[in-house]
Length: 375
Image 1 (tube, rainbow, N blue to C red):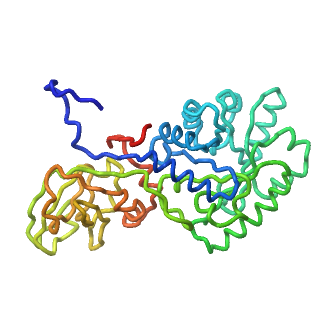
Image 2 (cartoon, rainbow, N blue to C red):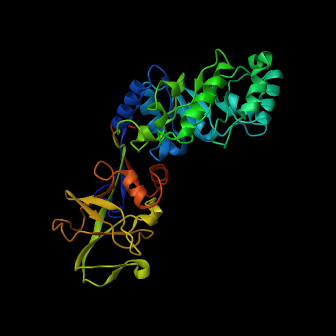
Image 3 (cartoon, rainbow, N blue to C red):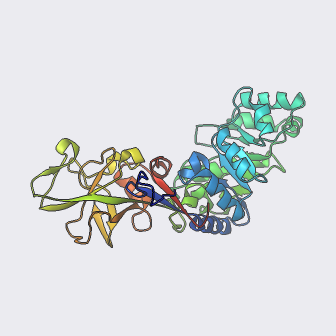
């Protein structure tokens, strides 16, 4: 955004919240995960606007860091990745919509086929002269998308059909990888290993972010990190650098007597005379309403002037209140970190009863996005 000081009608450059995207941290996280992948190719999940980071700058950064394969949820996301990284391989996790084979192939996108209906339609299109590549998704315990193990066994028993289909990848998805000792992890790995053996010569993929750190039996030929790339908590393995830092300015500081309530619903009663700083951010920006302190439940924390301070009262559409009684330097115009290097996104998510994935992907359009290190 460019503003001219000579333009009397120019709007203020900084009044609302912003998200600072650290692209070098994204690249560093990718390299760390690739080093942990034990020789498997490391792809990148950039669905959901690259977990709220911005799909174009994220794809560009990851491609420069060495990523050659990307996973998206929707074809329109795939088209952005294809335009940004023309040489990359792009898989569409939502599969094959009826009649979509020609357009996906023309766009250079590979559908992840997750049902016999999709496989039959893709095979018929190829038999009629269509040219394109696809992956096969087999369910090993998530019970969401994917062929059943029985359906996959029937398909694998027909080598000619498999050769005609020529799957570029055979994959499944872990349901509980962020809980390392969950028995379903070992069961899924066992099932998938047996499945992959039925498709000799076809690359196989099972591990997501947390799955990479479950060990070699989970990695196969390709791993597909998502949340870990962006600095979110993902289970076992070392914490990675936060990529997104959300800040908001203090727009007012007010003295509130002890015993008064604050915010909608009078949901929190202040136990002491309180300096309340009001921030220009709210749930319209993607900050979770449930992260506020209300109804006797403590809220999330923010970080200001070297101090962690609690949210007080409910989060409203455009405003958040924090307790800065013990931070005398907190004043109008001072920036406050809502999450980032000093306040983990997952800590805010936990206070709101959700997960870091949701907070990142909900970052709103009103947030000013500032990319550090290019974009």
